[in-house]
Length: 115
Length: 115
Image (cartoon, rainbow over all chains, first blue to last red; front, side):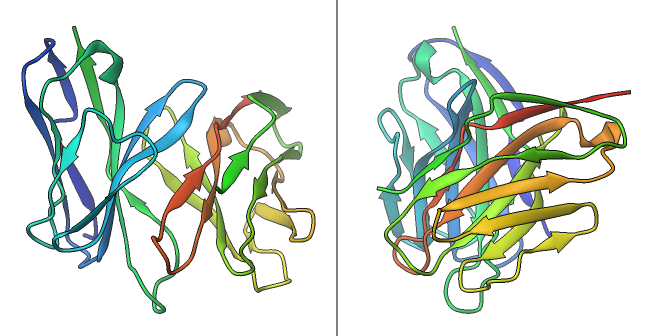
């Protein structure tokens, strides 16, 4: 089954304790991205990657890191989480280039709470 | 910068009736994609409908159709014969093609379906 898998789905942590949210897709997509969803603000892009070893900042990258060492994986790293990073996080992937259908495929979301 | 505006934070519709959700966007591009995504209480992001800007014909998917007005930069979603399962948050999204491949989302419209 074609899917984007995120883990963990739920996490409660404390300020300053490093954490990683993993994301993996099995559709051989070049493009992967992370979003955070907050009430009244919609989805805002954190980072994106157009291929292995190619990453770029989205609209709200502060406090986050990413890496793309393999095509299928795109982890989101919070080196020192703060309460304002409490949010619902989505990983998504897409084909890139002229053959793509345009749409993003989303993971199921990760609810993160930073105390 | 591209922006997507959904001016209706909340909408309601009687079961079996028709409702239209509005979306406007700002772009200087001539070719792009537009999407409507549905987010039910399960939080999963589900693609409802897609429109390529170069196509003049409005996209339709069963009970869902769009009114795409390229010159006005407007992309509304019409849901006909509304069902209880249509209750969800709906996000309008814009995708810039080729360069950067970034997606931009509106702030969402919460749709309530009244039995």
